[in-house]
Image (cartoon, rainbow, N blue to C red; front, side, top):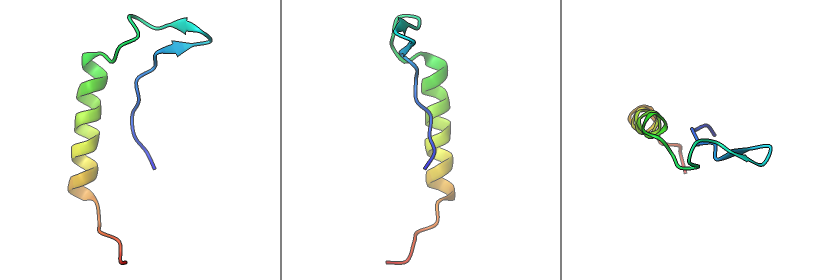
Length: 44
């Protein structure tokens, strides 16, 4: 299972302000939309 996640800390050091930025938010939206549009329903 894939996806994108923002990084808050590396080796205990805070990255930026520790919050998800606009680039990560945009990439997550594009990824989610692509996955849902191309997903194939699995048989039950």
